[in-house]
Structures are given as C-alpha cells and as structure tokens.
Length: 159
Image 1 (cartoon, rainbow, N blue to C red):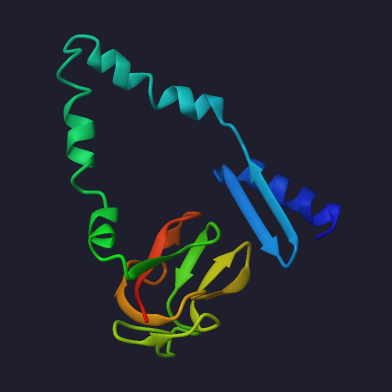
Image 2 (cartoon, rainbow, N blue to C red; image 1 turned 90 degrees about the vertical axis):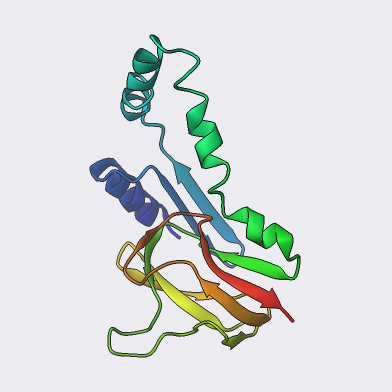
C-alpha cells in the first residue's frame, strides 16, 4: 500500500464517522485509530450528570444487564465451537451477488481456505476465509449489515 492510498484512507476517516481502520495484506499491516474527544466526552457526560442524583442506582443495573446478554457463554460451554470474526470494518454480504446463494449456511462444511462471506470496505469486496475447518453451527450476521473489527460472524464446530 503506497502513501497516497494511506492519505486517502485518512481523508475518508476525517469526512466520515469512521474511527478505526485496519488493513492487512500478506506481510503488510496498517491500523489507523482516530481519537474523537468531542464525541467521547459527549456520550459519557450525560450519564454522570443523570447518575449524580441516584449515584448507586444508575451504574449498578447497566453492568448487571449487559453481563447475561454476552454471547461468549455458549461458546465457552462447548470448546469445540470456534468463532469466525470480522477482520475489518465494513458491510457483510453472505453471497457473492444479490441473486446468488450464500457462501455457507448452517450445516455447511468449511475448510481453512473456504470463503464464508464478503466484507465490503471502501468499495472493495474482500473475501473472508474460514481459517478453520469444521461445520457451520450459526450465522450471526444478516447480509447487508455493518460489521466492526473483531465482531463474531459465524460459529463453527471444529472437526
């Protein structure tokens, strides 16, 4: 990746609300993360102001409510189930074209080099490989959905 393309990525990040970008190609890896202090301060500021009156009541329910809804609990129950995560920020597509069947579905057998989906980032369609062999147990993202770096996409029972 040349410096001109990196500058284009930075400019795109400035014009959009994108705060993090990661790109990897063979032995080259680029990660750009933008600190947005205006947005960061704006989000937490109302929470402490609202929590200042009932200081003990507001912070306690939020963590308690978010802990039971965490997804890693089922994966931890079965150590043979691994998660395929998104290697980048972009738009998830389950099939190569709108009228084409999905790359994989529940029950599909995948190999390490099997393409499981496409993630569109900056008008580039990136084929995502399973990187593990096994059987797809669950598809966690709907086609056309925006995904974040590290977001779980599929659960695969390793063979």
